[in-house]
Length: 199
Image (cartoon, rainbow, N blue to C red; front, side):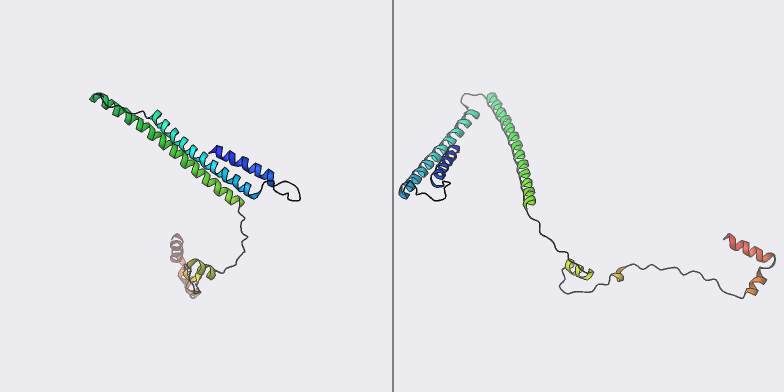
């Protein structure tokens, strides 16, 4: 395949040299259009021939490699013990090949993942980010956008808040001060004050 690619590259170079000269006026082509078409057809036919030869070479190379790695098994004239040893040897070889295949698959998976991540990074770096407009939304509009409701419903956010009940301060009864003075006089009044202060 590389031979075919180099051949086409050489043809492209010659084509550029003949037809794309760096002069201001375009010169007349040195080859007539019929001759040029004939040359292109010959090149295509030779390329197809080379491609067919390359495919045959790959098939032959595969056959040779398989013959080298997996020699034909000769089972004639083997005893039962020799057949069992051969089976064990083949199972061992299959296990080794499976381990290698698994390792290669894991490496390929990791490299594919890394390539995908790098492509994403390159796409992010080269992509222009759109300029976003600042939008002011009220709480009701934001709620309608988030919930997806088409009709605008007014929501009272204060209704859902917990209410804190304040304990009413104990008010002392206002009584006639003269009764208090009389009740607190003497030893009994001091005892009441002492008992009230201890609680």
